[in-house]
Image (cartoon, rainbow, N blue to C red; front, side):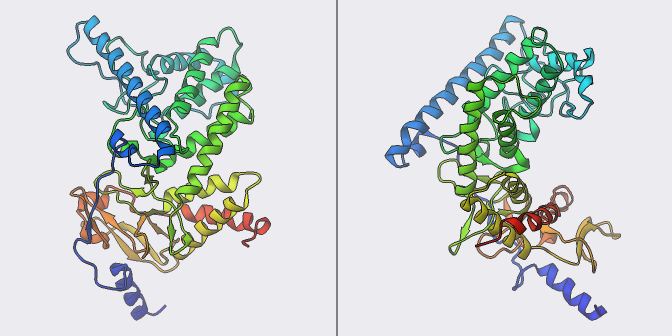
Length: 414
């Protein structure tokens, strides 16, 4: 590639569209919560299940809130104690380690932090101490029961490892907590098969069907292992396995139903989809409704892993692969520059392909958001803080496309 060609290529990448970018091309709309008023706009046949779901969520939230409030009052506390911040519990130790006193100590702490509804908070330290009276459910003030950042699913996996490594009598409390956690996930599932980020419902984007950071896929993968009695889940009763199987089927149907269609062609998915309409929706101020490469790669991985894909699943996979293949950015990297202005797209012939985190539905042009809710089509137009503090580009689709190439040999497009 000649020097002139490199500069021309750099200019094209800087624009990231066929026309000169506008400083602000849109404002990120808010994500709508699930409300009785919105449910009333659904087809009549769908409304009873959603009204029941909303009522159950409200009751669970009231029970959670009341439990923690009663503890504060009983112990004369004016504010809740705050647990430490910590990583998810380790799931990669040798099997024998999960029978040790150290592993059981962590399991005891995990059980102590389980919410009344049966879930767990996120980003909490499960290695320090058991939950104290008057201590909130986890490090985060909200998220009282969530599947964000591996929460709930990873504590359940840890408990399963400890249960499997021990005898039935001594692990009975862990088994009880595990089954409560599965019941929590089953209760949190929407009538249409999706899962919210937070349950009981917290409002805002937390009420949306959440693919972000693999949240829903984590649940579906756990349910698949439970329902098929994979190693480590032999202790799960048959009725729980059956409910996990049914929930997994509904979740798969939701994935297929939310795949974005443009001009009659399936493409990929948004990070979040509205729980009631299934339309792409926003999350934080800088996370707009758009096609999302990273989350779509994760959904593709999950679909490809299914042993006997239906024709509809195969069609979804082929369509997502085609979209990812055509939206790759080549010969460019995203890194800090020597002038101290932060990260920028730098022309680099032969670089690993990158994908923009967000692409506009209909045009596929990359999109970038800022804390003031403005949407831009040029990475250099957002604030330095957001440009440097968020994963605007990634290469996760490269890995799933490699898996797809092998899968497609035995599942050719029709």
